[in-house]
Length: 371
Image (cartoon, rainbow, N blue to C red):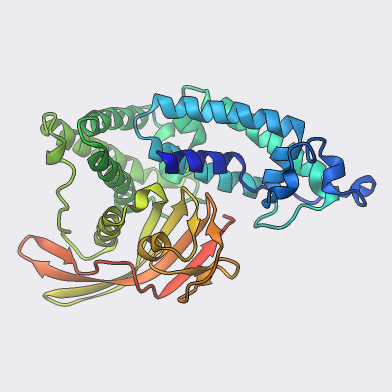
């Protein structure tokens, strides 16, 4: 729970910069002169530029409290808080992009007013969305989510599946429920791969109509599977099944098992897994795949969490893997990590078993704070 609270706080004060606006009157003024509460709140002790704005500007200070309340109310309404935290992290990333500047650049004095105006506008819109009963469809930022929300039958089918699954998970102990939610997330990634919706963010919806039948079949099949469990969550979750084929689905399952074993779910969520290449023999296979993750709660770039959950330490300034420890930097909420790794599989009578028990070593790695 502490990790979730930290993530929410970090989300409220995430970094955002809009496009540069010229304002000569402000060009020679310090940030302390422009922000009325800067001195009173000791905002000079805050190191992240956007945090300084929330700290020192009265309007941002007030709206942050409203946003915090709206987020908490939503968290209280849904059983799977981790999914909400992940969605909020994605919102931070999209907000930064829509405001025009990325990364950790300091905000110059002449940019403070447009930065503040951008943050106010984005936060007001976010509060309105959080309190709308149609939140899930209003906030969706994936092709699959948009396609589902555009079809009432698919939207109803998704809602019914969610209700069935949440009813099952409610019967599990906390640690078992955490793993079940991670598995539930993996279902969606597997669904998008099978329905040819992965990596289709810029494709017009009318060109994806062939995926609608696949989505309908998926919801029907999964709902039937959950109903057939007759209230026993162990018949659906926690079985760690083998994979029928050495492919991206098999890698996704392997990564989920590694993350579960290392309690990574409080810090990271897997956003996408896709296959790059593979070599298959009768009994063995090697699948090279990319795994993309989003940070949910801050952690040190060279810590046990970084090593076990991303496969390496990091040089966060260069956005590259860094084998040697020593950095005091941390990943912030909504930071994105992508690794490429070869996963080994062995054929058994029941399917393909992952023989890669850890994410180390990674072959390629990229970490970015922007989209």
